[in-house]
Each structure stands twice: as C-alpha cells, then as structure tokens.
Image (cartoon, rainbow, N blue to C red; front, side, top):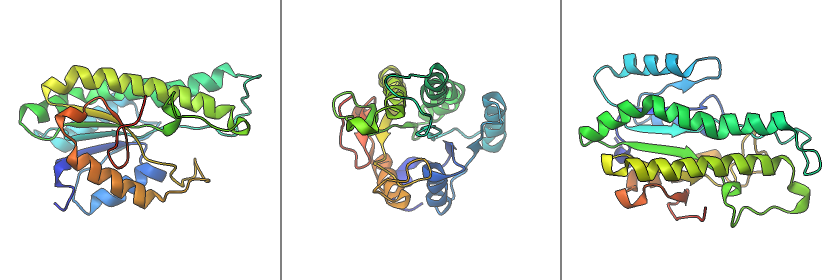
Length: 223
C-alpha cells in the first residue's frame, strides 16, 4: 500500500454512489482495498451477509459511515418545521449510522483482536457543532434540521468511541470541509482534496483520538 497503509486492508463505505463516498472509492481503488456500496434498496442485514462473503475469514478494518441527506430545498423554516423532514434527516444521518455500525461491529472487533487496524469514521459536518455551527439568518431552515441530525450523530460517535476504545476500535466523527458536491453545490473544497486530506488523517489516528470530532486535517473541533 501507499502512504495510507495505516487504514488496513478491508474498507466498507456507505453512501458511495456519488459525491464524497464515490471519491473515497476512487482514491482507495489504487490501494487495492475491498469495497461495497450500501444502497438504500439493500437491507443492512443483506449487506452484512455480502460483506462476510467477500471477506471470508478476514476482518473489517475501516467502516466509513458516509450516507447522508441534506434536503436544502425542502421548504422547512423556523416558522414551518415539517415533522417528516426532521425524521428523514435523523433516520439517515444519525439512526442509520448507529444501526450500520452495530451490524459490522463483530468484524471490527475481529480486526482489533488480531491487532489490526479497526476504525469507525462517521462523516459529520461543521453544522453539527453547537459552538461554531452558526449560519446567517437567510441560511436557516433545513440547515438547522441537518445540523441537529449531525449533532445527534456526533453524540453517538462520542459514546461509541469511549465504549470501544479499550477493545481496540478507534471511532471518530470528522468534518470533511465544505465539499463541492451535488448535495452542496456552494462548497469551496474539492472532493479530491478533502478525501486526500482525510485519508492521511485516518492513517495517523491513535488511541487518544477515539471519540473526538475532528476536521479533515485531524484538528479537534468543538462538539
């Protein structure tokens, strides 16, 4: 492997059909890592069975929970909060992360038991930070919904990371930056640059980084 050898051999990425997830695959392919895109129409249980078949007796070294939604044109405002929109964001951006991670936890623990790399990376956002996730009034609305769901995701990462670090798993939440994607056309960072930075950061993660919220360069961010 190249400079990202610290990632381990087997990598699973959710939400890899476009944007950040797809760019992760493009970067990791050159390192001959296994990959599986967990699509909405594939149940988590079936996905776990497929991963087990692919891996055989091998463990899972890196789980990147990337699947997410940001319905920027939903019409939600502070005066008109739509329950269904809130629930969709929390389901995809927070609840699904917890469920997917639990399903693949045995394979991650297997990696840790073999003294191999065992990482859980949850793709978060600066909007998850209660302290710094401030936007001008005209950008409120669905960005509040998105930020709330990502804050919930960060809380999960914090608890999971604290619980499993002594068993050899390092779990972190990471802000990839304002990446220019279909979901975020106003982004000021290219997906290639963001992913390259994050992969370098993943390779350097240590036990003391577990349960942190960091930026793509590895600098801690406030929850």
